[in-house]
Image (cartoon, rainbow, N blue to C red; front, side, top):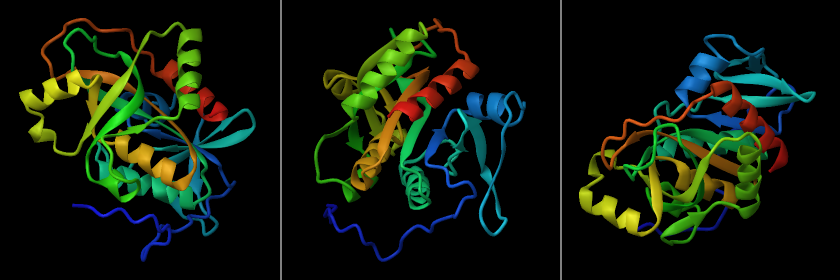
Length: 247
């Protein structure tokens, strides 16, 4: 049993990285196709390394200038995912002055009728990980901010990109996604499963920052679906930038 303590002063706190330029907005990019094939390795956009006042360069941080403002781009240290490391990454950003964050990446669909590359705009996340219980009182779900949801719906609609609205099941026990659990989550209105969302929503709420998250379906744990929606990394990146300027 985790006992939630609302005291914001912990015994061990993240440091302020003192990033040059003092960015206030960040994208947490959990999506390999966007980060590796569009942002970094292929050099399809003009970015520059993130440095701090001491000259340290951060390998998983890049800066992108958008509308005359530096936006921090982050490839989370957790790599493929994970609630605890993702939450720690977010805490580090907040301690360094970031107050608006958009996180996006892949997830698993939990209904075989959902095509690969479907955009999911989560209403809430079912809390089946441990991190969120250190940030919020116990409950089954943690909600995404209505303003964030409406901004994302509007932007995806304006860009003619179809999306699904629904709940997401967040679990840190990837090898315990049983048939029974799958059916329970379907019955509760979940359309996808991931490993971070509930934690990120909880940290954002606890730290009182603006936050929005959307997901892109990759695999499907409910069965095979050969249908695949068009995927455009450049457009997803630009939409994420628009979201972070509006939340």
